[in-house]
Image (tube, rainbow, N blue to C red; front, side, top):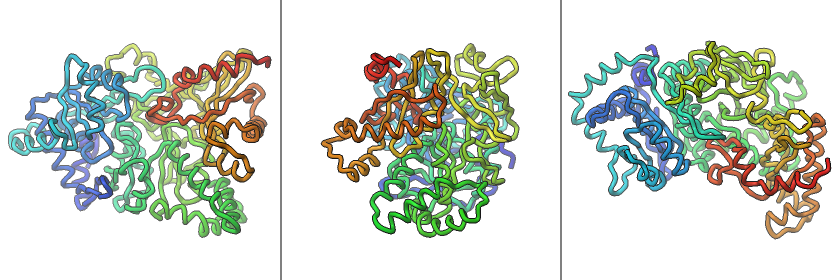
Length: 592
């Protein structure tokens, strides 16, 4: 079975994996609901017949705003089979963002997952002059429900099935399948138009490197509206791998244990959270158990595939039996395959997870490239920690004079919806897409160093790559998050969010008394300890990169409070505005 359009996955599943009883599953209220391949195919087709019966036409746009669930897939397949365009949207946007995307995309219909989302999205729809149809997935009083469309499709199957089959023959791999609005850390989000072949070329490319098969189960919890999780979702289906949708982000470990999962996709912030919990677990131990745990933790952070030391591997086998195997048990007990993307991840975390046989394979890409450009390859064990792997076959990469990564290939978008001018700004006359990321090759492996837009210049003309420095400082157990500052200033500075889990342990150990976190970070002993850590990291930096001044704050940065994007990247402009007074304090009275 040749796959050239996304919905070809359905025929491929029927051809190769029709025996699967759990190709898709979702956990709600502690119970799994599973769908077989045949149910997946049947429901997707019934929905497509129903959409035609409602009068929708080729090219019509339909938005989905819902948590990860099998129905997302039914809608996705139904829309593309009906020659329509799927516009998946994040569940955590503001009313203004929802109103903008619904209006800009020309959406004729919006599918909403649950009552909470319905209450958040409807105010955006109510302010629009032209209102789309709204259907919900969960049963909500006084709303139209997706079950009505399924029923309509079944009633009209004899009439509409031939039309869908005709459409499937006519649809070109080059036709637009989806418009994905970028999560963006600055400005208004752009609608990225991706064709069937953009998506298929990309997911088949990374599927060729997959070592899991139809006997395995993967957990999914990153938003399916994000192109990274979406194409991994397609990859799993192309290989007959079962996809289980987590109940929520707080149930990842429990869900992995429940399904005896074989892996998942994650962004660095999720993995950092698990890493911090593993580190904190050692602080609660005492005596010989504590000594063994900390020894094993330290050994794991030095893990490297290229390490040929027999002495290291001898100690590693002991640590694996005593400690690492217990970590795996918390996530189901199996050796895991974890793909990380979205932003740069600290090498220390990759080493630790991989030592525990929860192997992290870092990749790189953008929405505009469908998304993967490069990824570390588990099938060929072509892995270099600290890089995003080798360039995927069929994709070209070169570097501009300033180090910006340029790329072109079959995965490159068709352009930004309703914005040909901006499309021309990012795709040059030779077809090279300007990624905005800075990087270089380490042999055959691509290494990302920073975002071009985020690099700034000190008043002395020296350039600072903040992301690179931030990752260096986040290697510290004391630092949860950090933003590097200093554009057009005399020196680099920082706002630091401490790791309070560790800081509480340290304060207890050193008999530091405090009423709350604010008092804790005002304590002279704590400030001196953080300064010592900053000094230690500064030693490895160039003179102009050293952090001369810093402020520590007790806040948490999150999507909800606005400092992080939906993909958990720093929204620098928001942070600069929110902490303008602190930044003035840092630079207001210096003589450096």
